[in-house]
Amino acid sequence: MAAKVEGTVTIAENGCFLLDTMPLVWPPGSSLSGTEVVLADGRRVSVGERVSGGGGFLPSGAAVSLLDEDSRTRATECIGTATGEVAILQVTVEE
Image (cartoon, rainbow, N blue to C red; front, side, top):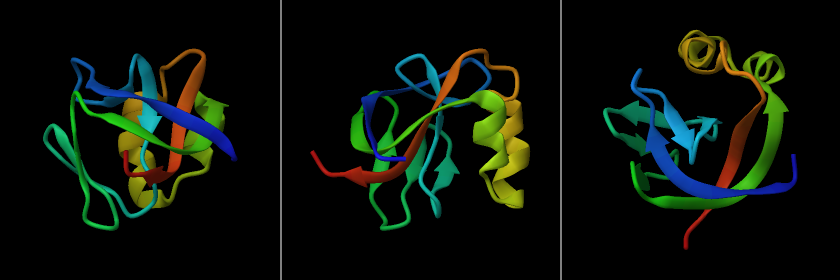
């Protein structure tokens, strides 16, 4: 997964995070807190902010299969019914 992944963080009606309009999987070690995500290094990303980093794009079923057990349940709710691709953000860079 070496593609550039960038866009604006938005949130769907069901509370799931999106990259623009595409379901978004955050880097390992991230935690969700309302309309904010705390990355493993402590940086916080809020809805409306732009993010950029490395990762890639996968069909929804393939994206869910990459996740650890703790993340899989919530991700299935958010991307399990998505059609098309899901943005996988593995690392972020500060802009």
